[in-house]
Length: 105
Image (cartoon, rainbow, N blue to C red; front, side, top):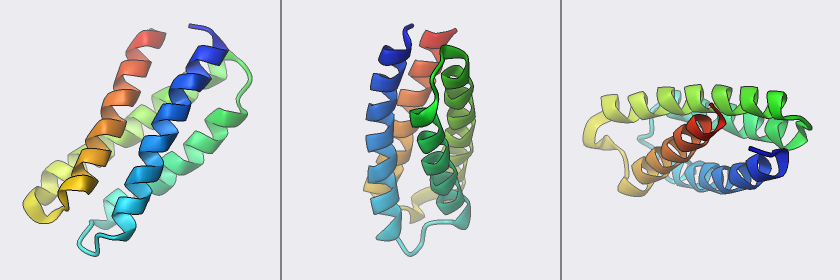
């Protein structure tokens, strides 16, 4: 996969992360672990935007996918306490990152 294609995919992931960040601000019951994950993903997304080669981008995707795994687990632990749009945003972000990771390997 070319660098430009990876960056294009990451733009879509970044949009999901931003939806997640907005949703988490509106959910007072969201666990701290989820809030931490979204902050981590925002930082990693910024790092990915500044990456210039496939190796760096691949590492960024792997790091982001690992953070989204933790977020998905936090969603599952919290049960029905989360607002549906927050849970959907987390799961969409995770799915997009998982798909991208698999395309890179």
